[in-house]
Amino acid sequence: MVLNNMKKIVNGIEIDLTDAEIAQREQDAIQSVLDQQARKEKEEQEKGRKESAIAKLKALGLTEEEVKSIL
Image 1 (cartoon, one colour):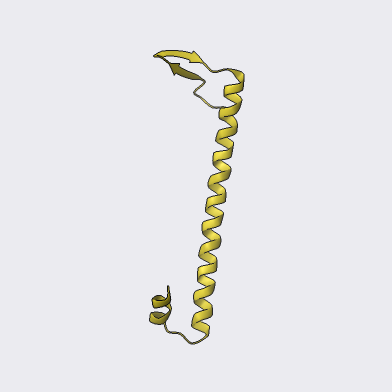
Image 2 (cartoon, one colour):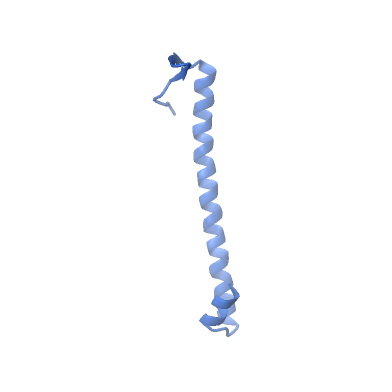
């Protein structure tokens, strides 16, 4: 992954990033994508568990209103 912005501004002066800074930015960008994917997967799992719980409650004979009141 190559980032477009390879400069930084220090005291109003534009300076090129070092190789280490560029590598760190690239790693940060990759980690950001991984974190976003992990959050999305966690949200999807939570949604699935909630839907499963609702289905089980309905299977026990609870009405839609009763299930909503529990949640």
